[in-house]
Length: 504
Image (cartoon, rainbow, N blue to C red):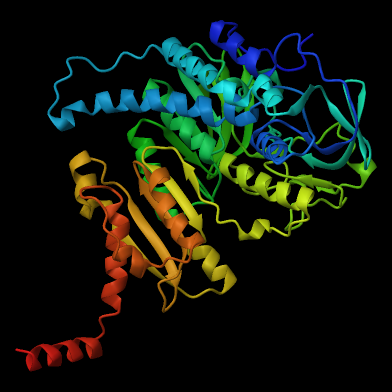
C-alpha cells in the first residue's frame, strides 16, 4: 500500500516524478551512529536545512513520509504557476484585438493538454528535490512516519535514529472549514486540484487569499465559470486595500463572480451539487460541478509525539523563538509548520538560520529577515515590509509615495497600466519601511525594494540610480524623483535662485 496519495493521472510524467521524490523500492539507510542533525520533512525548509548542513560537514538524516519537494514542487508553487502560465496565454489571445491583431476565433483551450504540460514541467524540475540527489550530497534519506521517542531519539519505519539536534519542517496543509454537507462531496484542495484532467464547467472556490484568487482567475481564463467566496474583509485581506481593489476588478473582468460576506454556507446534492449561502440576509443557491477549499492552512504535527518531548504547539503550528528554537532546546523548527510567512523563499531563509544556530551556536534572528511575497494574479501583487494599517497600529509615522502605472511609458505600451508602486518611508526620511507593487511583473520588481530595505538604501539613492528605459521598474525610480522633489523646499529654491543670479 502506498504511504502517500497516489499521483493522478498515472502517466509517464507522474511516474517520473514519483521515481525522483519517493522512489518505489527505496531502501532506507542502516543507522550507523548519532546524527548531528535529523530533519523531519523534505519540503523547502527541510531540503535546504539538510543540504546546507551536509555541505558543511554535518552528518544528516532527512525523513519524509510522503513526497520530497513538499507542497512547493508537488501541489503548490510549481504546478500552480504552470497552470497560470497557460491561463495567461489564453487571456492574452482574447485581448489580441486591443493590439491590432486579428484572431479569427477565440482560444480553444485543451485543458487536458494544459495539465499534461504542467505535469511534464513538474517532472522536469523534480530531480533538484530527488532522493538520489540528496543521497549524493551525503544526506541519509529515510521514507516513513517520524515519531520522537525522547529528546535524543526518533523512530522512522521501525528504525531508531539518535541525534544531537532535530529540526521539524513538516509544513502545513489545507484547513477544511466546518460546512454542513461538505463531507458528501469530493471537494478539492491544493493537494488534489492539480490532478484534474477535465475543466470544471462551474467551479466554486471558498477562500479568497492568494491561492483562491490565483486559481479563480486562472480557471476563469481557461473557460470555467468561477464563483469566488470571500470573507467580509474581501479578497486578499493581508494586502493593501488599493491593491485588492485592482485585483478585484481584474478578476471580474476575467469573468469571476466575486461573492463577499457569505454566511450559513451548506452543500446540497440532489442530482447535482449546489452551494447554499446567505449575503446581507438574502438566501442564494449556486449550482457547482467542483468545489475548491482554500480557506487557510493547518500545521502537519500529528503523530510526531511533540507533547512527549516538550515541544509546544497550537493551531498555528509549532512555537519557536526568534532563533527558530522550540520549547525543547534540542529541537528547532522551520517553514510553514512554525511561521506566519508561509512562502517557499521564507522557508529557505529560515532553514539557513537553523543551520547556523543549531550546529554552530549562532544567534541569527528570524526577526532580522526582510520577507517579500507575491500573489500571481494578473496583474501580480507584491509586498514587502509594513503597510499603512500596520504603521498606524505600531505608531510609526510614515510618508507615502505612489506612482501609478498609467504614467509609466512601458506599462502604457504593453497595455497593462492597471496598477501602481506604493512605497512607505519613515516620516521625514527616505528610509523605506514597506512597499506594495501591483503590476504584470510585480514579483520581479519587488526585489529592488527588498534589497534596498535589507541594505539601508533609501529612495534618494534609488532616484539617482539609472534604470533602463522603457521598463516597468522605472516606476520605482520615479518614486525616488518624487522623494527628491520634497527636499526642494522654498528656502532651498531661494538659495539656488540667488546662486544662479550671482553667477549669471
